[in-house]
Image (cartoon, rainbow, N blue to C red; front, side):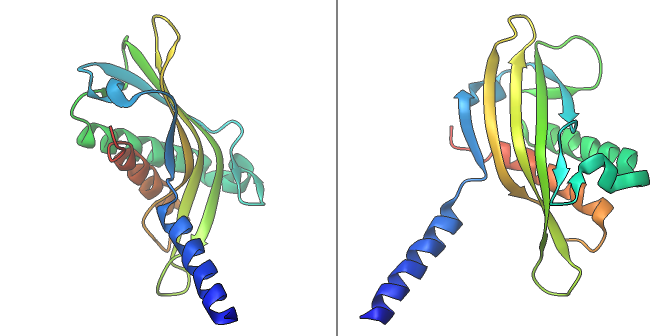
Length: 172
C-alpha cells in the first residue's frame, strides 16, 4: 500500500511540474499581440538578481553591458520573427511600449555534459498603451528557460529568445 501511495504522489508531483506554465496572463488579453501596430522595447534590470549572488549587474561585472545588449537583440529579433501582428521598433513614436521587468535569473544544470547549463528568468512583461498609459497585457514570467550552453554570456540571449517565442505560444 505504501508503494502505491508513494507512486501516486510522485506521479501527481511530476504532472504538476510538467504542466506548470512559465507564462501566465495576469492582466488584459492577448489580442494586442494581433494588432497591426508597433511597440518600443525595454528590458528593466534595475532590481534583477542572479540566484543567491545578489545584484545581477554586480554579478556580471565587466560583462554587464555585453549581456544586456545580447539579451536585447535576441528578444527583439525573436519577437519580430514570431509575431504576425505587433512589431517592436527601436526608435520613434509607437502606440505601445513593451517593458520586461526582470526579478531574477537562475542557472540550472542542463542534460548531458557537466558545465552545460541553461538560464531561467522570472519577472513581469507588460504591454502598455502609450496614449492612455493603460496596461493592454501583463504576463507573469515564471521560469522561462532557454537552451543549454557552456558559456554564461550566450545563455542569457538564448533565454530571451525563448521568452519571445513562448509569448506567441500562449492560448488565445
